[in-house]
Length: 408
Ligand SMILES: Cc1cc2nc3c(=O)[nH]c(=O)nc-3n(C[C@H](O)[C@H](O)[C@H](O)COP(=O)(O)OP(=O)(O)OC[C@H]3O[C@@H](n4cnc5c(N)ncnc54)[C@H](O)[C@@H]3O)c2cc1C
Image 1 (cartoon, helix red, strand yellow):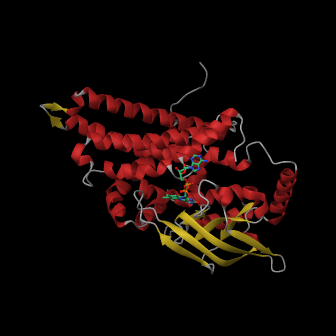
Image 2 (image 1 turned 30 degrees about the vertical axis):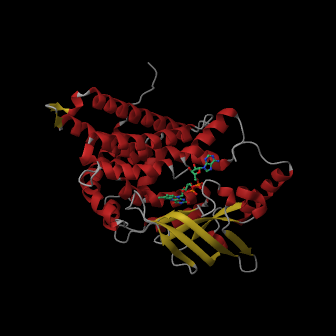
Image 3 (image 1 turned 90 degrees about the vertical axis):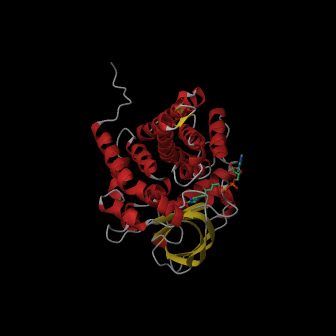
């Protein structure tokens, strides 16, 4: 017998059960209210902070699970609880990952704690990359960062959009163009410290789903920050830009870039969120189908309903397996030779949308009302084929990876 197993170990089971308890007892009872209010559920984030679930330590612990399953297991349970609140709780990590991936030890130590705040005074953070004219196509980004060597300061100008926690964050991480001639290789990430002048919230979006999560434009007008806010530092940036210029001269790079590899590693976590939503809707539909009686028998006695539930369960389990595989590959440092991270996000996102729609159908009229949660779950699921790379972009990445074509 080899040591291959798909069984969670004791630590992973304990993590799952702990988060499940919070999701069932704290998140679910609050879900409908915050969806209606369309506001950040600060009291729930605070509850999560009190038990250590909203903290840098928690993510570090889950992230360093050597099997890679800590994060996907945690995400599935949180989003089983509620996706809107779940995103409010994990939105900060997008920005934290931006600092962890690109920042120096000192920058990580300075900024990441300020992103979470404390249990008594919780804070959130925002990661701002997307712009009105640069969504899927990040190379079209216009927000500009200009360096003032005499003052060792950067000045940022531009408009970011769709930023989760944008404008309400304590710390914003902003991606900006430092050398327009280099396209996406001429970009760098900056930390905008709390209360920096010139950063303001633009429009707050009224959304179809995940309404408890705040999404807004972030306007940057002569935002002036010290040189130390450039993630990774100036020397590293200069080296990177010099290499990019060399490559450009030599006719451009045709292989996958480092950013692509980072996306492959982070996408399964987003896929796991979608699995959580799908599982929640499936459970409601299964229970309903067993108890709802029409024509003198529970509706699950009709093959049309039973087979739908069989397909829902099969797709959810398949999605989870893809997510676990990609998470394991990331932790084991395996190369994503078929864009397995993108595969997991693509399949899980599409599954969540399909499963939640099927659940609504099984609940009939009740499924269409806000008396039952599947209508909200369906609205929430729809973002999973759009953000963190749309389904089309995932397919594009998979197609180009398996065919050996360059990924732009
Ligand atoms: C609720 C929410 C939260 C978000 N949070 C954040 C955040 O915190 N930070 C952040 O930076 N961004 C965030 N985003 C932005 C998100 O990542 C983008 O919306 C997403 O990348 C798509 O960009 P777009 O909306 O401009 O669509 P577009 O890129 O304009 O795409 C429109 C359509 O065209 C398709 N398409 C585009 N290019 C191609 C192609 N080459 N081949 C085939 N089809 C193509 C797309 O798949 C899509 O169907 C968020 C978005 C939402 C809605």
